Image 1 (cartoon, rainbow, N blue to C red):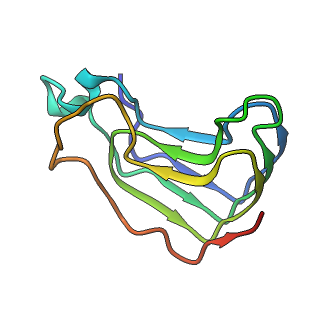
Image 2: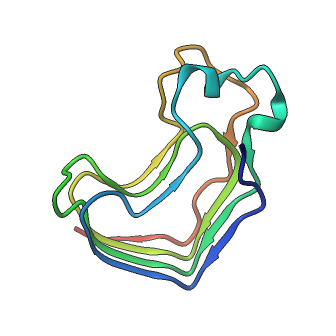
Length: 112
């Protein structure tokens, strides 16, 4: 099942054990689905504040987007993450999928 056209706006995540916001999947089949309708797409994360992410799981990102298409990440502030503020396009599919694309993150404030 795919969750599409999701808008996460004006939220606060503070002192999270694992990752903050997670979009898309990371399996090899997710990189090259048999049915294109399975690709997560058209999601937006905006105006959010994420801090102290990965308090217990040190490989956690503030915002993680695996295999997804047309993901907008705008006007967010991310601070004090254990690994990465934003991780885009990561997964276990070793061949590039041209259907997976991101809009460049805009107006991000990243601190450490």
